[in-house]
Image (tube, rainbow, N blue to C red; front, top):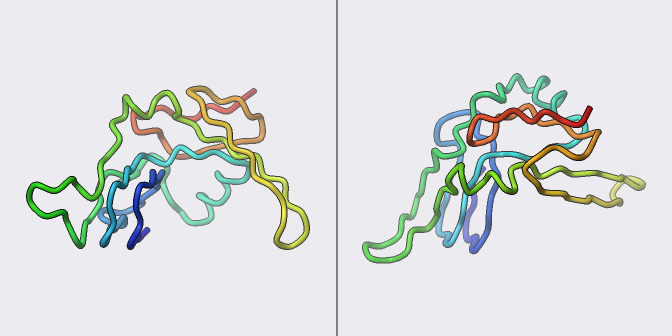
Amino acid sequence: IRVRDVTSSELRIYAPTHECAVVETSSALSFRAWDVAYAGLAAQFSTTGWDGAVNHWDRVYDFSPAEPGAPPTFTLLPAEAQRLTRWSELSVSPEGLSGGSVVERCGPEAATPECECPVLAADGTQYDGVP
């Protein structure tokens, strides 16, 4: 992922390799580990060959770092701070070719039956889904 001219945003990312998250001329960004869960995500990871146990979300390269004394262009949200909203579960209801809705639920435990996430949380916790 590469972001340019982005401000005041929180990004939940999965980075399969070192420094595949790049920031340029941006400010007030917060990065956290990918913790998004939705139906079909495990199959998508399997197709790409990505390993959900390996996530370099905290290896961000900044093309334009802040000047000395200025606030940093980005921060990494500590694992402890990510715990309360650890899982962002998405329920997707497509309509037609380009319509539909997405409902998000965030919480420390799985609550949406059809959701799945093969990526470990920042603290190493595996999404366990709802039986």
